[in-house]
Image (tube, rainbow, N blue to C red; front, top):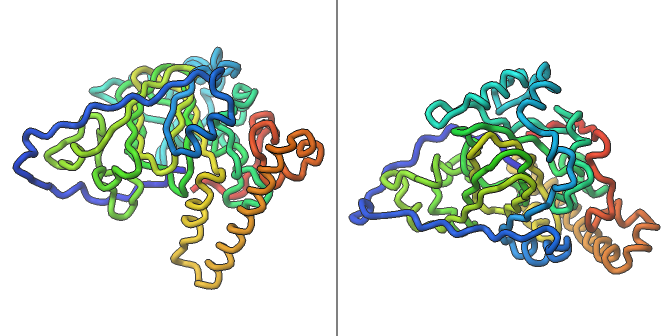
Length: 350
């Protein structure tokens, strides 16, 4: 999940004799696989568990949103609603849509990235059912997960912007979360960098998962010479496609046209250990409290793992018993589609 960025200073200048001739490496293409050729189990095995990005074509073709969601649809149906566009900016939906349509590279408009559907625009939920299996939230829907992290929807949120706009900055999601973005309208360009490139991406001093590099496609190599050593991956997401961004992969996105998409996060056995480490490293908590917290999460993880294996081994019996899926649903077949009803969350997203 993304968190508010700090206001650290720009990167200090670095010089080297070769910086005048330095060039960014040509981006590699993110692999594209058709949904009909990628069963959910193969997706987990080949991409999620191996921490490899992938674009899945045809992942959301059954969603009503694919036919309904246009800028005009949002203006007409939700025009009078106020939306949280960014951390500090709120706008009427109609004014926001107008600004998106007027956005250009020279005068970029706003980019919507703080509208969580269950809390802010529940009227959109029915348009995202039946569930896209590749955005299944996993252990975020477990009955054992503390309330602060209980999100069976995977923090489902709406993203929208026009030409020239962009997500605020390149980053990776905190708490070792995997991320998935599904494009519904328009085209969106993604740049990704593997975790080992982190030192070359100039992390912010006070918010280490946010990069100081403003444009990873065309970075200023005078200010950021180590970017020339990084290995970029690129994808252009088309309507109906889902991109999987693995944990700790740096990523940035910008619309190439007016773009509407949704974003979710996944927590499962591949990123559970990193999640536990992150949420149990709390400098404000005492040693005893941190140890108890870690002990609970580690024990919960063992039980979740066992219940997931049980569901995969004897799915019919697991569904009849229901309890294994409540403890930790092993896949989208073992839980209720979160878009069929509005979920209520007492703890707001940070």
